[in-house]
Length: 326
Image (cartoon, rainbow, N blue to C red; front, side):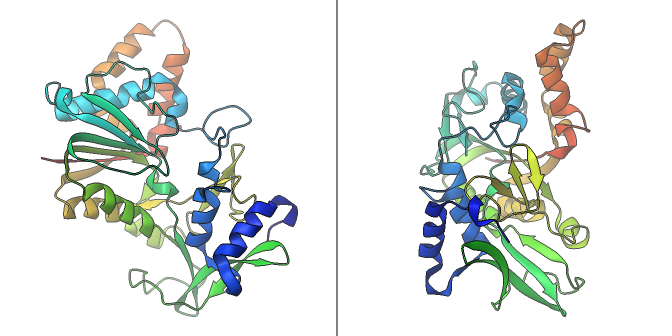
């Protein structure tokens, strides 16, 4: 249950309007409100979310400076070919800044475009479609196992406080039938819907997504408390209802579902690799050049490269899903 003082009057009004007379929302509806509402949504507010300072909430690969964008560009060139990329548009979906991950960098691409949260998405022709932590930020539903049946978790506003409730509702058939009582499942269905929206459009080329994720087996067998979490001022929390509209909410995507969606839409050989493996395999020359140039000093650029690749930092924390459609 949340402290009423941590909920703005604007958010309470938006919640009440969305919830209607019943006074509750399913968790994905609550999350859509908390993250994407045009007035009170976390991702719609003009604030710094990504970075290392105390006013931001989390850091990611884009916080490492230009080297991340350079590695992405180098890997795309390796996967597609130096000649082909000259005729392709690089499109970043969900970019945090107007320039995106390649902002200010010289690139060989025909064009570089960004599509920020809330902007219409239109893809056609020869493209490289890229995203960083986009799919894990899609609203998800929550379920808990009770007496050999699944119960959906919702959010209610009671006496000015947000609290979790269990809802009598039809449950998706994809949920496992043999989970232990008390098992919590965070169901990332909206991430699959987004993948279908992206891949059903008339474009060909390379898809690359950097994100958090797990296999279906891991989600159903190894995550008894779910994978949902909140981030505020660089602190990870399990209090998903605190500071609505002021903190980020996320859960792990299911890589099996996303790769299946790519295959359904004509992409061949979708592959999930760790950050470390993806860049070492596909951006080898840039890594070697950077390591050689910075061999005799410990520069900011070298430190950023190490954090992106080292398994104890972002090297294993993130994965990369990529596939081609010709």
